[in-house]
Image 1 (cartoon, protein in one colour):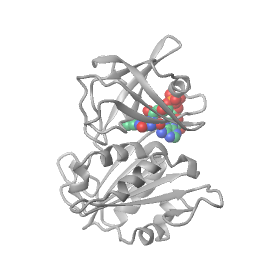
Image 2 (cartoon, rainbow, N blue to C red):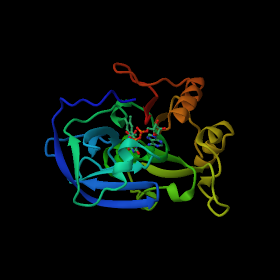
Image 3 (spheres, rainbow, N blue to C red):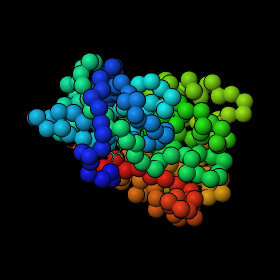
Image 4 (cartoon, helix red, strand yellow):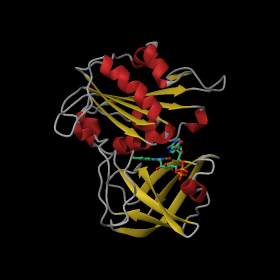
Length: 262
Ligand SMILES: Cc1cc2nc3c(=O)[nH]c(=O)nc-3n(C[C@H](O)[C@H](O)[C@H](O)COP(=O)(O)OP(=O)(O)OC[C@H]3O[C@@H](n4cnc5c(N)ncnc54)[C@H](O)[C@@H]3O)c2cc1C
């Protein structure tokens, strides 16, 4: 979890440029970018909205890549959520506060080796992985990238078209991209191909994740990033340990990295 929002850090009022509603409870939005803010794909910002006369700060992972002029974020609207109830009403042109600091350690440059990168996301946890894939670095760091997105319904597979375009335009000398989807409550026509009807942890346990990918997950070859629901992360952490994989530490390289959203 992120530490309590700091009010001593510099921030500026930015403008909401565009809002996309993916489902009634999922939206993404772009904002102008403070000149002072730089970041690495996988990191997150602190952004604030005025709620009942108070400035409420929350952590949001960048979906945009560092070279992009605008900042992009994706958000799930939490019923009665303090911040997201206000976010839901946001219109282009509205003001949003953005801190000039970058945060977080879910960055691919922390892996010193490995051939395969596994990105495991639930819900809006896909955001930092889209940012990484919009940036060239990760495509030359690994030979194969496996992006696993766990959601309830197919409609929640945000950025699906963009990711499929990235997959189709894989070029020589760059990593291949496999897109695997786990739907926990799919409609009857939503599964098949690279989309299976189960949770990520179940797909790991019954072997269907690796079967679908056509690659085993091993401590030698695989590096794993986990983002989103803390329960998924806790369960996967135990499974990775059981395969002899260790978390990256500040001074010691490892096999996996995690980011809990709550
Ligand atoms: C490092 C970090 C990065 C984050 N990045 C994102 C992001 O890119 N997109 C995003 O939507 N949220 C993200 N979050 C969560 C975000 O900061 C807020 O907690 C969320 O927007 C809810 O705020 P709220 O005030 O509306 O709800 P609150 O009233 O604060 O309610 C919080 C509760 O909402 C639920 N919740 C919070 N976030 C999520 C989520 N992402 N998916 C499902 N349930 C959730 C949990 O049950 C949590 O206890 C991130 C959190 C952290 C710590």
